[in-house]
Length: 228
Length: 228
Image (tube, rainbow over the protein chains, first blue to last red):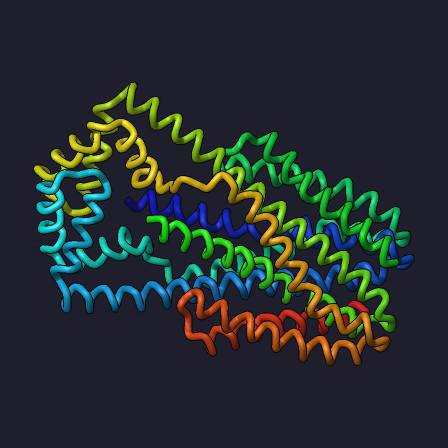
């Protein structure tokens, strides 16, 4: 049980990093690429890139934080309601437990016995209703903060990769060449590990992640050229 | 059952729209705000904004598409493995069904009976293992495409809101004033409906969504000023 919990937590952190880095590598990359086709100074690209990284990391991080907080509030308000319902209309709630077992394909006899056994302990009963009637897992109260930091920082780290060449090279199109090379390699490596983590074919997954980045950057470049 | 399915589909579509519009209203808004403090021409802001909208909508839309496809592939490969396991090691798989019922707090007698009843029909058995051992719901095969379009288009619609004043006003800081006003109102209205949809207090939720946008825009403005 402890081992499983730990496994879940580390995979949630990895998921946050994947969420943040995935967008962090892609969107600032595409923005820099788009601007490289339209402006003559890398100064503008750096300012826009930094502004985008600040905006994106805050929007994603703070968004993740509030989503986590909302999940906890939602869980607690539903938990309170389930306790009230179990007290106020126990027979109706028992019927819902039986229904769950009925939907699994169990006989009436087993449905009744199972419902009686679960209804013996109020906490077990309410936890059952939360998980199987409402499909809600107990959220970790610390998740919201951790999630916000992981997503936000991963976005910043990811975003600095495509932007870094523009700090050292003065010509936008020259900097773009290095940026494309470095970012596509990073997207490939990142996609490889992300795919392994999620049980997808690593090479295929890596190519797909790289492709999204390339398509986004190409589209941004093309669109910026049109509006130039 | 049909009604429930419909309800789920429309809420999935709303969820996609919320995901796309939430970032679409926030990130291009913050980028435009950041650049408004650092450049003297709205032309650059429009190009950067359009490039960002193209990049963000493609990254999010294509990202959503691939995530959907991956979910389907993952489900199908696990389904195949469960069928094989049920054939190869039926007693071990029955034991896992009993364990699930044991964890619910049911007596040994009910655990055994329930496991025997579920194992009578191979499809029921495998579906049970998929859902309750692995926690996997059968994904809609059309979801990936629909999800990509909904998220991507919502991002474009959301992103054009903060950018629109820059098309009509030549001075960045003047355009920013209108952009802040229009976007904060839209974020508030959007946050209000999003909160109602997810069962959060609408006014509080609306204020939070507006706050994320304001903080992201303020940070982008400040950071861009530093790097100006």
